Image 1 (cartoon, rainbow, N blue to C red):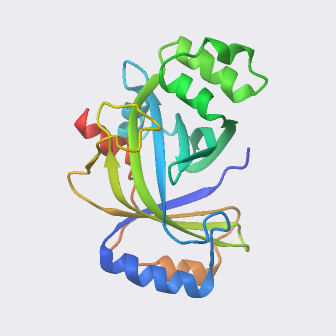
Image 2: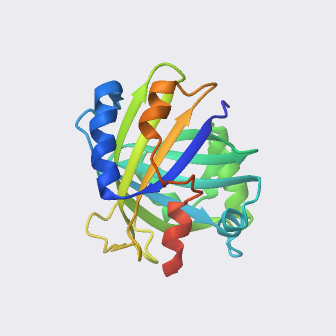
Length: 222
């Protein structure tokens, strides 16, 4: 697994509008989402002690987080992801899921995972057997840009909402509520180096590096 650098900044609407113009002039839109902004829905997992939440809040150096994710309410492409944070770097393992598989996991039916040929699903089985379970739905809208040199990806995430106690992954009508303090998140990820042209664009006066977590922010409700 390739570990990558990651920077996050909490920004405002004026920042976002300016960044969208600047990034569009230099970077490419995400080739999978060339239409611009799109909807992301994630179902996050945690255990009965809220280990993932507590490790994030406490700033534990080495931690992991499981989620199921899909886009634009389209169940034709769904992934189980394990996000890893290690020594300030981030990485991600993923495995494709069918809609019925994802729904089964969301419903807490996971015994079949042990027989999967996908290693990440077998790992999820072991973790769920030890108490990991679907916890919180998080929705947001995203604009994404890419740059080949340094394998750079820049995202602007906004309209972050949570479905409170619901884990109804594929319910388009599932009620959601916005964060108490609405914010926009700028994320910058790269491999070995961040090209200066991108570094200059994303450098914003008065905006400090943040450790913002959408999952942690949405857990304030439950």
